[in-house]
Length: 152
Figure 1 (cartoon, rainbow, N blue to C red):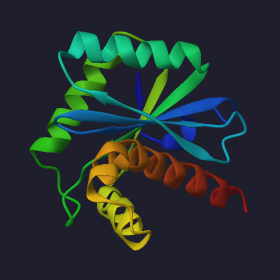
Figure 2: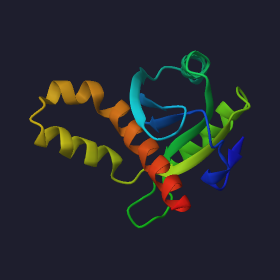
Figure 3: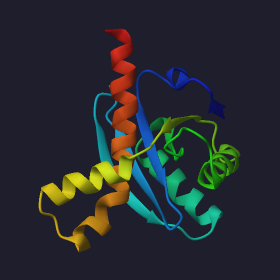
Figure 4: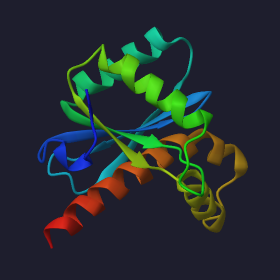
């Protein structure tokens, strides 16, 4: 089920962050207190059913209580075809799990992660292997930081 307000996600327990690309899905997991997002894995996309099975296994193995999905808005905030695809994925995945899911603006997440890796002098080959799970972590951390700022 999708929630309009990300604050409606459970306040304790591990959250999963997803960066949905056309070829891969980056996955990140938070700690149980929801302070830190950690890159988890990158799933090579196949068919929806296979992708969903892999995500459900990660959810089960990590006791995930909610999901934050990166929403690839255009730079002007408008919604394009990638947003429609992301929303369709969420609707289909909601039929496989009862966990609450919220969208989080992911504009510039991949470019921010890539820029950081370039500054750290990480080779392009290594960047390609980790960029999606790092982008998922960046998205999830953005949500976690925003949630904490609401309370202070």
